Image (cartoon, rainbow, N blue to C red; front, side, top):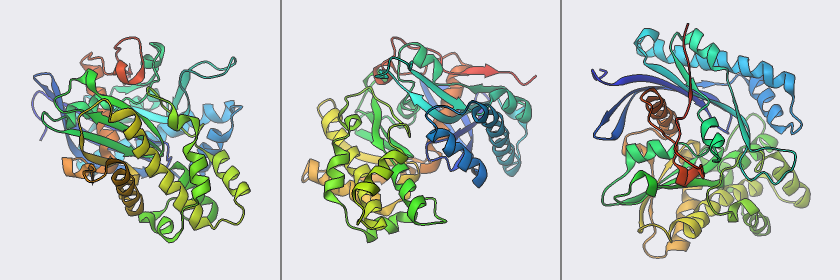
Length: 395
């Protein structure tokens, strides 16, 4: 049942894992300056294998395949609309009940400042043409959430800390919401914090290197289901040490990244230089790298700024990887000693791990409808607060 004064928002997104278009139908409302959301339903619409292959090829083409980008922008929009309509149909809702669709789109390239290049300008590109979604679904569609923050000099990411603050912040406990999608990012909510006290940034790779290795060596698998492959291997300590010296890991916030930095080139380089390593050992090393880079970033860039962390809540596909969770608990124990943060999934807070980012964009959509600036300049580095998203009418 939708509250009388609430907005019904259907949110759509696809992350750096490029595995599906996720759709969430949410009831969103505001009370005393705090925005709340109730998840009504969630749907994962897998990418057709050929579409996923072409998307990944596009992301690997650093010169830019203009024709393919143009085509996929519209092709993906129809897949996003299919996902939205499938969810509405399954839940028994109609398009005319929606206040809006909030579509993050599919990031195909992210180039945050500084670019370290005289030829490239700070920029970001999400595809999935919102005009198509608006017409197909029959509801106003909000998209291009990252562009205004980048126009104000920000990284354009992460954007979900605004929603995390409204959904999960606590008066008497410091928590971390650690997303492990293709890329890993943390939102730190200090006890009793205001929105401007929130700490958030990308910590490095999430599942992206793991998934690339599994696809390379274990045909037919797109990811390491429950971390079974990683659990069967041994960590290659020399390779792990090299990866931990990656400049991005040591870069202080604000920072954001993507497949442009942690992608196929890293994997091919590791395979070339460690030719006798078994595939399981490489997967184990990538899994440990994700866990260690998260823990290292928390120690270096979070702990000096906030009260002791009580719990690290995991979200995203990596939350379901038992081996990754165990590795992360080990790393936190090494860093924090006898009183490490508890590791749990965000399901404990009432939001399914896989749906968390979708719910976040429903809240960002609500903020745009109500003209509430939703970027967090202390997180993204933007010069000021701005409205996020552009509204495409369904006409």
